[in-house]
Image 1 (cartoon, one colour):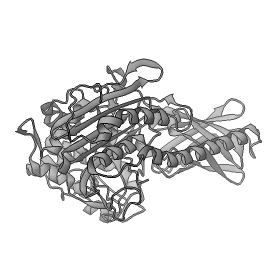
Image 2 (tube, rainbow, N blue to C red):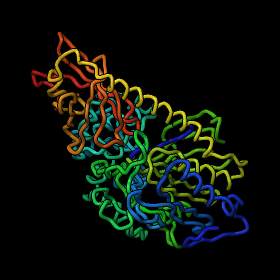
Image 3 (cartoon, rainbow, N blue to C red):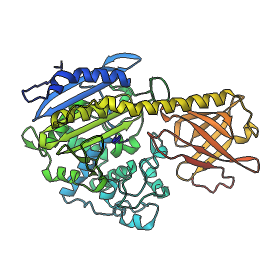
Image 4 (cartoon, one colour):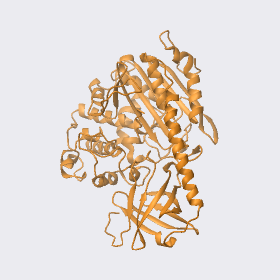
Length: 512
């Protein structure tokens, strides 16, 4: 799904140590991980480190599910979310290398009905543009509509025409999951295969990634699969499994650290794997070439001066080395995959709590150890930011509870708020009575999701989603001539930063 970019020895299989192993890795990493998992309330974590062509470490920690027995190991499955994007970028780069398409081909050559907000962008937008987040939209814009929804793939792409950009096309970076979906649909037009089948047949199966899957739909039934957890809006709890196959090329892959070490070894050996040229080096180069600048100012907390984005991959300098990485976030899961070709170093970290930055702190800590950065406890540093956020969230939840407990009367009868409301991007929500003092909200494109609304004051209700991962937020109504006319609905920033304004449409003229 979501990429999370923060500027903000061992008992294991295939474990190799050498005299050049940094002392932190050999002496301290195990305890560092165990302490970090406890401090950040992470049920389970899997990690692998590749160095000089060898798997130095692959190991699991903790449990797959807080309510059921089952230890995490190197084969445990996690949603890797946006770490799916590099597989998509690589597949498109392979087709480009084979002269089956060009990165500069307009999307409308393959999807003639495709439209963006304005005609100029629609005419110019290319395969390269959708793979590097330079469409001019905000980061995550539209994802409340798309994520975990019942919308088919082409319906998601159709709705891109309703996203009014806040930035400038090809100038401003804005992370767009639907862009990668567009690339996947182009791939299907070019090859006659779905994105899922193409990646399986051309990358996963030949590379021997036998426990990597293209779909989230059946993850819950697979053996040795981690469950998603969060403590963002409640005590640590198990969340429903995301179903995000409609955003597949951006986010739907499921894997484990054992398989991902194969992917890392390929990246670190210029497209070779076990002495065979698996992919042309030029294909990997294209995924790494900078297509847009994400940031060009020195970071005050890390030895980084620039960050760029290629095709499903970030690049930066780190204490004099060029590093490549991506993160991934789905409800209850966050992941990180990183490699440093100059050091022949690769790192993959998979976790099953989405409300933590330890997965990033751990990556930085390992990079520090190998790249000669003096030791700083990255986890403790990021805990400072997290503690502030947790306090603010807890304070806001307490205030909303107090406002609900005041049992204020609504300015108009509760039934007046009921009915259908529409948003051009999303479609319809339906608000109904729920008992004597509550309302219920259902969502046209999220059939498994509901929300409970409890009145606080000032035409504002506390909205609590049935999937607590979506959050708890104020829902603010406006009245016109004494009748509710609009309602503003918000979900967690993990999904989308902006709220949606839904309006009544008695004439039935709005897009549904």
